[in-house]
Image (cartoon, rainbow, N blue to C red; front, top):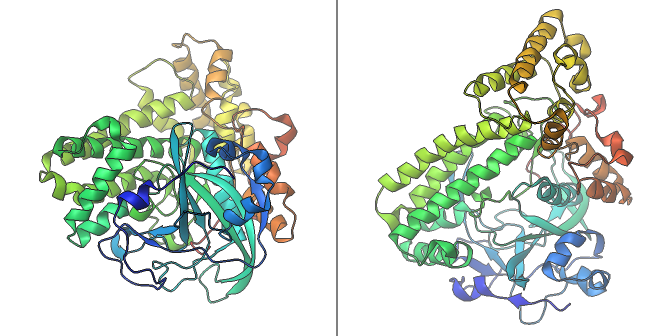
Length: 520
């Protein structure tokens, strides 16, 4: 492969001087050098040709054995030095100390068409940050991460990307639900791609250790390579840097809310400094609209990372980042102003997002009441979020009496729609029609606009599970079908109409479809 390899991260940031790949506390360093584990019999399952071309990799090169070997960690390219990153993090609200890349190994950086990308393997073996784990990943979690990374990109959600999915040929022992029932599963490796994999925890770890010297080195590096438009490092630039990270974080979360995505584990070590969705673990998509839903079994009791709380957690995490940047700024007021701005912007941006989902082009000061009334209706019975908003685009002025009929397919249990609930919906559709009368766009123009923000297809949990079940039997056709489907989530794609459907009953309580763990 003729890649334009770069070494920015390893050349400009402090390295761990210890080369032994043994679990330990790594001090005064941003990363540790470590080589991927050789695997038994690597087999390439799928490649994102879009991502490959973005990196300057040709279709012909993808077919070469060397591609499979490099992106499963079985071949280290000449003059490259793979490494694992050091970072800490707050997990479920508590400082967890050093975490780091426990099963992710960065291969190198690639520059193509004036853009630089870091390439990382997930599941390529132990690192100094693996703690008691094996550094490996299983097919189950790898299929989910691979499909979701690219699905989110095509939905227009800021995200890290995925280049390839491969079997390692090794068997990996996992306790899927942390219930003491361990079993061997197929090992797999995903190659992930991002301009950077730096997280909030990358900065937190230095402050926790009172290492302000390396904190400054890392922040200055981040600004130089990823926020250079803010100017040279200075106190004023650090403040602008925090403001932009805050803005990007909110933008990402507003997108999550728009499409019904629940990350599941918004710890500060899973928060990208670039405002990208990162670390696809126990994520899920809302089936029934529910502010209190989380797919993560680990979070069942407190539901800290539930759908409706994601914007608040984004703010909480930004508070931790503000604490990490404080030693460089030495002033709380500008940081507090930015955090307050997040709260104000959330109200504004959230309202704008919901207006777009309802096809409202003009601003009306009572729109928030219309939206609140809709959310109340959606919670009256189990109502599929994706189907409801997609079908709502077919509503026309004068359709108030037909409103329920238009969104009928979104209801999971029609028997739940009592006369009282039906009346509440009819009242809402009456208010919606009254509001639409103030709009200047035609019904067709509004439908086109709504269908650009309300996807027809998302990676529902049961869809990913079906692909996993087939893949475990050696059949990868469904992975490819879903990959193609999710490249055009806003298009009708009549040939894939079967996927525009509510979650089937069998998936309601099936592991992998309604509940997931961090075990991957």
